[in-house]
Image 1 (tube, one colour):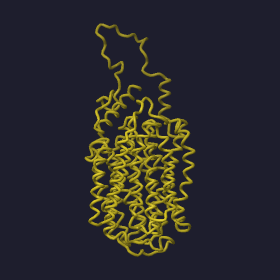
Image 2: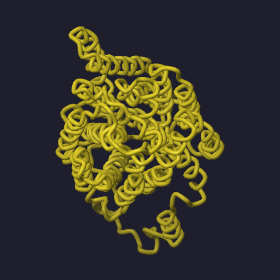
Image 3: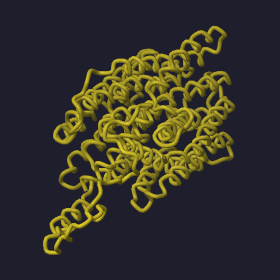
Image 4: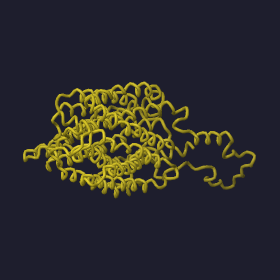
Length: 538
């Protein structure tokens, strides 16, 4: 068994190194997954040697070994060794899920009261832009000191950003709060992936990913209802200011078991060298470049060419250095996994972000009802993630990912049909539920594949690359769709009085064409992801 594990680790190390353009490290082999050292039956007999008597042969298995193997197979993420840690990290995901659903529901009213509808896309992209810096920094931090420090720091920063947005007097301060929140979120998400890699055996990782998805079920159902009710009766600020209270529980539950299970660098790894400050500088360059591109997209004047060119000059070389070699051309294996994660996440986030604004401004729904349109998504996302965790579907993982991308593409392409008033809004809720089913299949499967292709000492860097592509695609697609939205008059829409009190009727300044263009861009990206899904295996 030890020999087999060494063979798998060697393959993962070699594949990961080759994907990053580095030569295989010492001990890497060219054998396939599961390669092992030769056993007694594989060694040819020495000519002239006497056969070994049957009485002296060592049995290939013993009852004790068989009992231990059976016990390992029956262990779950809720078994005694993993129960406390599973509860803690799931609590963190619950916090993130509740924040995402609650804040997304309150966002149209917040932007309207701060006179910032034209900056609506910035409120989302600011989070993803700064999360890039947090992700890259967290990857190095995790590889050097374990996931505990970046996870705790990230949760505190996440809460601080919520407070800043909740007390904002202008839209730009609100966006700044979202940026602070993004740094914290970037630290947290990479640390969670490294925790799964370090603290759970490979056979349990799909189940942990499914548990992460299941953690979105309750927040996705009650989050929009609570957020909409608070927004309508107490004000949108209390949505932001109330969530930081939830930070206390994850910290209390998570820190002790995490300190025992995954503190410090990986066991057996070489002593960490000096921190790679170049990667952090590259991450800052990516964030600045993405921000400049989005600013240029919102300006829509000839002078905007200057920040656009500067942003591209910062962004392109930095991204090439931070992502695995071959990511842009979807090279098979790790690069295709990283690229598809960005395409799936970016297309879906853009579509989901504009749904509340579209339903409030074009169909006259209240923010509560608009948010509830997405309520079923968490349950279906969890269902998709649960499906990919079944062992019998492991040989079909590539087909599972492709099917998931087809469902995501359908949901995005269907969304603008709700602009036709004869189309019931509940059909959009059903379509987005199917999209979430596909996202659960895709995102969890890609996470499992990433960890499988990563050596233990490279889990932090590769997880950071996955999240970097995720966040960067969100920023760039939000920048592109935000520019298209503004160019077609989307910045002139108003949520109206109906959003605050549930009144019916379309708000002033309706611009259906702007929303159609947003969903057209997202659907094209998702459709391209269906093709990339065929390249995720070596």
